[in-house]
Amino acid sequence: MPLFALLAAALPTTAPVHALPLWMQSNHPAIAVTLEGRPEPLRFVVDSAAGATLVDGRVARRYGLEDTTAPVSQAQGASAQGAELRRLRSTRWQLGSLQFEASGVQADLGNLANGDAPAIDGIIGNDITARWDTRWDFAGGTLALWQPGTLGNGAGCQPNALPHRGEGLRDFAIITVQLGQPQVPAIAVVDTGAAQTVLNLAAARALGLRIDGSDARVRVRAKGTEGLGGQPQPTWLHDLPVLASAGWQHPAMEVRISALSVFRAIGLEDRPALILGADALRDGQVDISAGAERICLRRQAGG
Image (tube, rainbow, N blue to C red):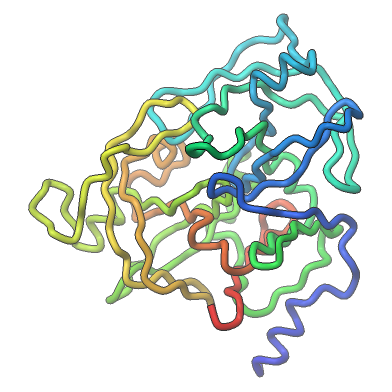
């Protein structure tokens, strides 16, 4: 198919139902959210790999959203130590022109802050975004939501790499990628909420990398990698020469290597896999269809 036809196939035939301003907050894509009809705009990260919508504990307390009778559960994030979650009472949400009533989940999100940047007030998870065909236009600063089935196929698109994924991964965008030169095939979880791309140890081994201190291509990241649980995991850094997938390619970039517990939780501990973070996505577009059945990556022209 000619290039112009591929590009035309990617263009929706209708306008999005909702178009939300998107900006980078502490290296995470964020949108403005209001709760309970209050005029105060809150800063929520939009995370394609979060299975639940979270509200930081300080916001939940200030807005009186806590439900002390709700049971506490554990969420498995990047770190080995899980984060405590508690269901909040139902409240009114507004994301631009999108309004609905729902009960989010309370969590401590303090570890997501970056230096002196404003605190992150919450996370919009795929429990909300997966109801729509979504376009994360990082370069254009917009998160657009269409009715399911609106966005086309076109260049840079592929079906979900785990078509028979379990219920817990149903709304997660998972693709196949190729790492380095020569290319190593791997499975990638598209994670807009991750600041940096992270390879698992199986991917590092497939690339011939060693983390025992004998490989000059690998260096220790002193801070490790923290998730919601707040316990840093040992982490190494590597300059990956190329990262490619289905008509999309990212030039050389620094990636992390870490045995994050999330790889084990989603069954990708023993095969080359990675968390594809916002650092690889922020100069282009990501389309994720409703239910994450199809994923499209596109880089900005000249990027």
